[in-house]
Image (cartoon, rainbow, N blue to C red; front, side, top):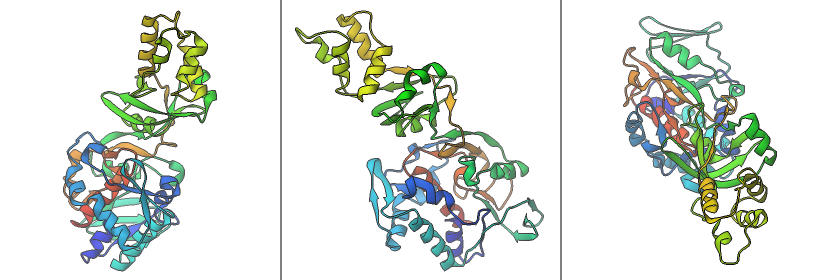
Length: 371
């Protein structure tokens, strides 16, 4: 995106790509369909030490701008839940579009280019094996530490540190939780069971699906809350949002026992999960106060993850180049003229659902229009 916008302005651009092909993360995104933006994108959908930083770039390159791009190339797409836009066919459509636009403006993509050293004299010098690239401006768009098998490294952070820029500690975000051994023994044989829940932590809440995995919890609600979670702290899960499950047990002449409770709970929760949860929260008796407590526990299930699945399974990296080091308008370093950082390498992390792509497009466009 940065190369396209710079090329439109007549700049000579080389995109140095370490892999044998560009855009590999685009290809695997959204289950191969590329959730390329979200029509409800606002600055509130992003996490950063400076919540105001992303506003300028996001305002100047909105979801509708990227959608116009997609429609120009006649790429069929559809909206899924919560404003998420996906390709009808394949992620390849988005990658092909971006590569075609680069060709059109004369931006060159140089593949299989593993960079060994970056230095600066009167211009930037990038050495890759026997090759040397020189330019007055250098843009770092190397992403974070997520999915190392796709080639993710700390290279972008290393360059930032080399030039004296501060880094906010990178951490896995949009990542499944691993449960402690006791909780794993209790729930993880229910792998594959999912339910709509509200997951909460530190004033943030997300109402989406939760999925039990063989090591812990995942699904959109869990991935979303993981970006806010702090190790050692519990998360809270409302297992039946907007429902009152014990009502059936309180009716006159109703049977009050474990069998009746399971029947009531299975109306709202997956059968196996309802049974297991009740077995671990069975009240000492079935009085109204005990049912009140049971209902309350259901809506405030508190569980402390042992950790996360780490960068290997994280969809994005939170943290990164400190936004205090950069111009919010152009992404240029305040300390080193003509050095820019864009996309995931910066301390701006989107929610699940196309927001991280929109930040990539918006930050790339901001720099491409300024470089």
